[in-house]
Length: 138
Ligand code: GTP
Ligand code: MG
Image (cartoon, rainbow, N blue to C red; front, side, top):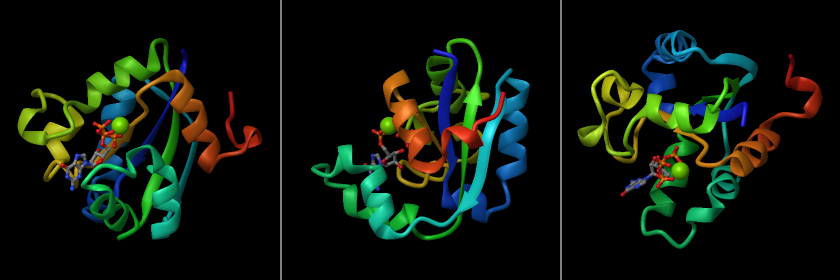
């Protein structure tokens, strides 16, 4: 697939790392096709992460994702989902490879700087959570 979806999470947005992270994303060959800054309510965060609702960290995740502004972005590149997951690195920054976004900016397994869709299907679902077709250019 050619598109994926990412969020700059509240930890990275609040720390002023949005620009540096977008620079890493662009240098890795991704084009930005839609973007917005917003602040999720706990209810909306819960809806976005509904697939994780049975996991023990679900409450913490929803509290964290609604704790401050985020930036939602749709990205375009060949093999977008897989290549972006590689660029962000492991969920736990202690296990993230050198040169990845999480290695550089994540604080912990929960506060890990960025989201990346895990399939083409979820990329489309997650993009439409934030954007209309008309907001996705190119
Ligand atoms: P995303 O790109 O954000 O979906 O991360 P991921 O695919 O690498 O991880 P996963 O989908 O398994 O988990 C979603 C998010 O839940 C993670 O990115 C973390 O923010 C959070 N999370 C995962 N495991 C834990 C945990 O053990 N504790 C806490 N507090 N949060 C966790
Ligand atoms: Mg995930």
